[in-house]
Image (cartoon, rainbow, N blue to C red; front, side, top):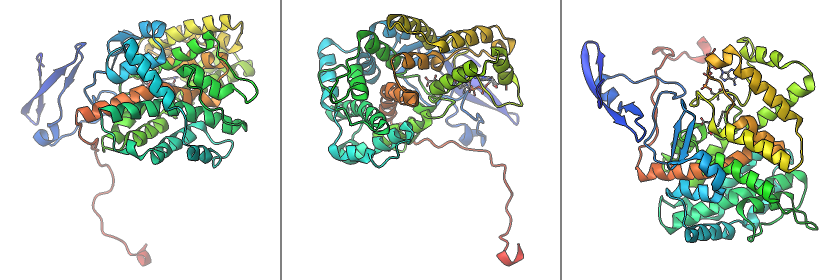
Length: 429
Ligand code: SDX
């Protein structure tokens, strides 16, 4: 392998494959013509070693715990940017000027309301319907009431309007799903409130008493959403790209992303962490009991919130969240016994050879649930909040796919089933 060529030898014949090198000197071997040249495909279940695209949105360095959106370090964005600023950056590539930010905010405020016919659909869901199921369904439903978004491509005023409509309405749908389940009347968006405070208003206000988010709570929710805004080619973002690669519209693509995020190995982990911590606390058993279960190959028990396909060092988001959780609990004069359990679990795990050898560290989901608990978000809404946060990343990746005119996603396989055999009539089976 030289700087820009890898040589592959199969059955004594050599093939030169081009090396692509990215901004941060990551290298990839171009196998786009491999099957045509060699008759072979590569095999990589779970795509852990497979690049699916070229992207300029987010950079993750798993070995060094680095995360940047459009080149800006997550630590600086977490400290200084609102979610709307971070969303604009991810979507348009640059931090917004004051004028651009004001216009973006105005579009988000303008598009927060749902079509009244859409509201009626919530009553069709059972009270205990999973909010992620409602979210995925309602995102597709929104496009039925805004058919123009079905034709939108990746740029121009129509795209900008569609982005604002989606980013704004995902928040309203989430809040309304909570209100429906709680048997409470919908609280409609207040255009005078910020993105996060408006969501919290729609979640927690009542007809006779408006909920006004304190700066601490508004800032905590902004931080949560900034930290979840994108994360390169994770499972749900890859799903959005695969669906979008058939040139399916943006709403059906992100609706599929919601479904992928729902899984406990992905976005569902934030709620699973809280359930795990509650189990540990209520059981009275020592942490070592749970570590042993997690290490026992005969047990499918896993420490939720630990491990990551890319980060083989700390997930920088978990470090930021852990620090902020302390501050928010302190500012809200709250104590959460689950934080003590989480701290002990982290301490014991980081000293355990099994976890050290496998580079298993707390990921973004380990402390994020404790932050959401502190600001009063109900447990079954945690992954929905993750979806609201990830929406800018999903939209930006869907747009980039179209800008690159990327081919439809269609992986290959190695067949391991039966060889050819004649049909057996029913009477002879
Ligand atoms: C997110 O990709 C992203 O960027 C995702 C995300 C984003 O922002 O989009 O960062 C958000 O989804 C974070 C991950 C949230 N999920 C969890 O916390 C669930 C618990 N974590 C694991 O299930 C697991 O670590 C994954 C799913 C996160 C990663 O799975 P991999 O990369 O396929 O790793 P693996 O299952 O092959 O594990 C490697 C080894 C195995 O042991 P051995 O076979 O080598 O003996 O590590 C072990 C695993 O058994 N292992 C764990 C473990 N995670 C991995 N053992 C105990 N507890 C765990 N949590």
